[in-house]
Image 1 (cartoon, rainbow, N blue to C red):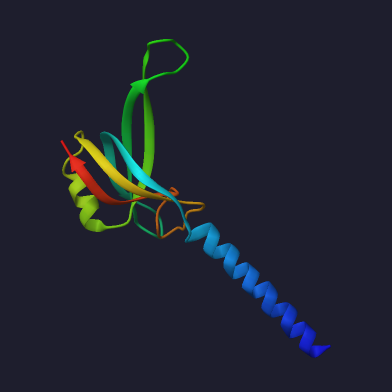
Image 2 (cartoon, helix red, strand yellow):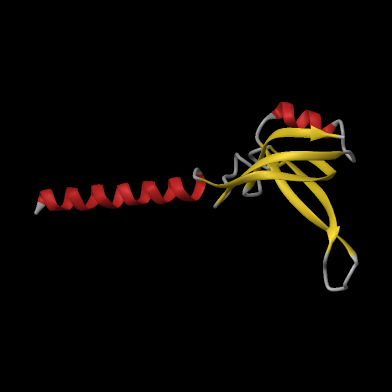
Length: 121
């Protein structure tokens, strides 16, 4: 009886740890987004995180041939990358990001985390 209880607790703990890893640490996707940097800010009550917004222009929307803009909100993991973004607001950037299934308070407010500036114009 006691042995089966420990086995059950071990299996439940293993399953929970796999679920937490999948939700918060597994990189679901990664890629590059391009657009004009709208803002880069440092904010937060307890955990000060770096956040930003990229404005992407493109065709689409409800009207045929109309120009629309898409917003890509992201968090930044590296303070050096944040400094580069902060000092060049309004410029066109190509940003490499990683997408997670969930966000952690100390990693940022979004599930998209920028880890590299590919290009800046």
